[in-house]
Amino acid sequence: MGRETVIVLDFGGQYNQLIARRVRECNVYCEVHPYSLSLDKIREINPKGIIFTGGPNSVYGEDAVLCGKEIFDLGIPILGICYGAQAMAHLLEGHVTTAPVSEYGKTEVEVDRSAAMFAGVSGKTTCWMSHTDYIEKAPDSFRVTAHTPVCPVAAMECSERGLYAVQFHPEVMHTVEGMTMLRNFVLNICGCKGDWKMDSFVETTIQTVRDKVGKGRVLCALSGGVDSSVAAVLLAKAVGKQLTCVFVDHGLLRKNEGDEVEAVFGPTGLYDLNFIRVNAQERFYRKLAGITEPEQKRKIIGEEFIRVFEEEAKKIGAVDFLVQGTIYPDVIESGLGKSAVIKSHHNVGGLPDCVDFREIIEPLRMLFKDEVRKAGRELGIPEHLVSRQPFPGPGLGVRIVGEVTAEKVRIVQDADYIYREELAKAGADKGLGQYFATLTNMRSVGVMGDERTYDYAVALRAVNTSDFMTAEAAHLPWEVLGTVTSRIVNEVKGVNRVLYDCTGKPPATIEFE
Image 1 (cartoon, rainbow, N blue to C red):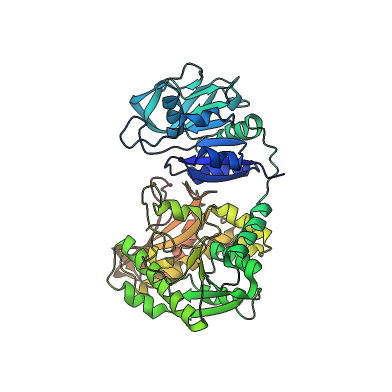
Image 2 (cartoon, rainbow, N blue to C red):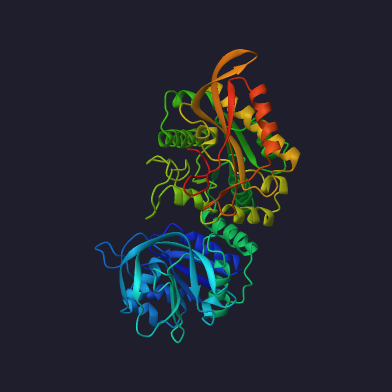
């Protein structure tokens, strides 16, 4: 008997994989497919439920993306979210139009608690809205199950046909009872048992990689971060000594990190891997000299990474596959598919057009950070590695605003080391999603030892998040920030001012560049 599956049909929304991740949190396997997936393929998958995502288009615009209405006759429960709700209404002869008042952000929604989607949900609940169009009139066979003062159809259902729709986004954390709603759909309406676990993903992925690689040779881009470490161990279990891990020390790592990575993955480390360390600091500094634009820096670092890998591959002989630890927030921020570009990641949007490998394998591409950590634990990776701080592929290159120099790298390394050390000492790091120091390109006047200084400002960042798609600035104890500030300005030459970033995501991103 096959595993229970819910499929997400993607209409171009930025949250398509977040929806899938929420379904997997219900312990039900979920995968994302394009909205144009054929009915025959859907029947072959035999899903227990289907979810339509949001999207940037209008159902009555020239660029509308719509599936065929025959999908509603499959007898499979369907949930439409945002644009997906509007698409459902439009295809079934409801009326969608431009809303007189657009709704964005947290909105109080009044729900019908007798509706299947809202079992156990408060009568008035806070949801995340993001729409310009709205459903003005539900199709004749539907009943309205939620509304706001300006949105007459915030939710609707036709329980006889198993069709449900919500105008808001239950998958984001800002919808307070969103997981209850999604569990209602997945477990109660679709009838899923909820017995899928992450170990199933690990086992399936190992076998998939083994089948794909065959007798080929594999080169893994190992940064020492959580994502690439999990990818490396997963590949090692799949293909063993056919794998060579190449660790490029580009001079943009955290303080002492190059040696720490080698201690874990090198010849005397925890794993029986073919391991190569390439010290390429000066090479990267030369490439980045004079470059200040963030996207250009990312692409330079990304291309140089690939070129180093190609050179190492040639040294060890023919290599067929390149493995990278790309995860889903990297993909969505890089704007692949229909999503808007936020910033390219060196192993996604930063790849050069010509790469000298038969294929790139990204086994974690559809996972979020916390899911990667779960996969790492299933693989038996030590907790101190699995739970370590996330670190961007371009490293400190995107934590230095403006031009990157060896001196600036030294400043941000020392400041970041102090920050992390003091947070850990005070126990203030517990529960934080990510925290780090960044070097701004702002210099300001200060006074130290009765003398005028004109030095850099360091900005500290700490956020609470589970999925890294949204985040809130952490409320760190003032006394801890005071200690960190005092140490940085006294111990790090070239810094005379320390700032704390209070901005969430959105509107900011977690990294500065």
